[in-house]
Amino acid sequence: MRAGLLREVAVFKQPQKVASDTGAVRREYVTVLRCRAYKKRLSNVTDKDKVDAKEVFYGHDAVIQVRYNPIIREEQIVEFRGALYKVAMLDRQTDNTLVINLNRINE
Image 1 (cartoon, helix red, strand yellow):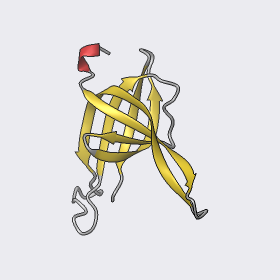
Image 2 (cartoon, one colour; image 1 turned 180 degrees about the vertical axis):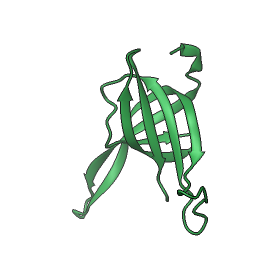
Image 3 (spheres, rainbow, N blue to C red; image 1 turned 90 degrees about the vertical axis):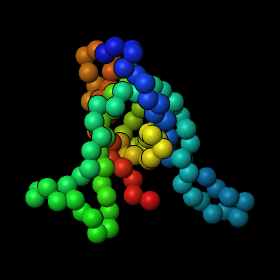
């Protein structure tokens, strides 16, 4: 992978349980890594008939490539281009990079 292709910024966030003063426990995402990324593909999710699910949810898949880092795990979420994505699959390549399949989180 050429370093000049890494034009985007990806922020990896790890879930962490945080207790408030009242004792309530909630899950919060804490930034663990900010790195450069290459967008390989960004597409809408369609069903088998190639019809978008326009009723409730617009699904989006993204495929990005980053330099390998042992901090990156599948339970993390990624902030990429202002949207939050769930890591669907990590694929380590022979050239010390990771190809990451992402699914957009519907908020």
